[in-house]
Length: 186
Image 1 (spheres, one colour):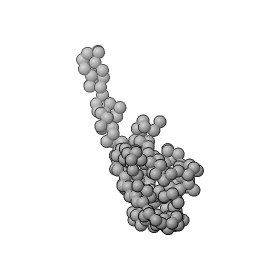
Image 2 (cartoon, rainbow, N blue to C red; image 1 turned 45 degrees about the horizontal axis):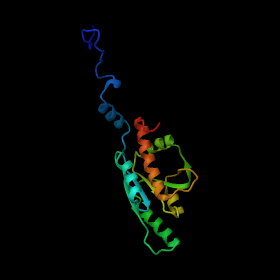
Image 3 (tube, rainbow, N blue to C red; image 1 turned 180 degrees about the vertical axis):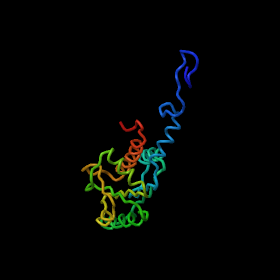
Image 4 (cartoon, rainbow, N blue to C red; image 1 turned 90 degrees about the horizontal axis):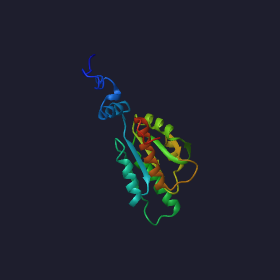
């Protein structure tokens, strides 16, 4: 009998811990996460507060993401005209984008990306601080779009900004699962 084998025929051969297939799951997970280390933090800057089921869904995905993304959100004051509201929202967004961040603006005029492409891009973007910007019902102004390092879209349809935020956090979670080889993304 060779090294690592028991003296009986009905005993399975178990090689030393060098084989990745036979390592405990905790070891595999730790090794895989180390391979896709995230250097920067992820921030979502958005207009509109999530409440009720919207918040529950968002929080469910956010708690699965490591490290957890930071959410900065606000609602415009009541009593503003549509134009004043748009100005207020875009000023608030611009003021709350973290300095020296890679800015990714979500806008229907942006480039459509598949989940796999988004995962590749997010992996590259997260080597620094990355900030996703989601505008309100009036959209983003030209100054924010110009300041953005990337402009992406979840299709040509116009999505409610609260739903867009849920779709974004799900795509960030899906991207992390793709990078880890997790079966969530099939």
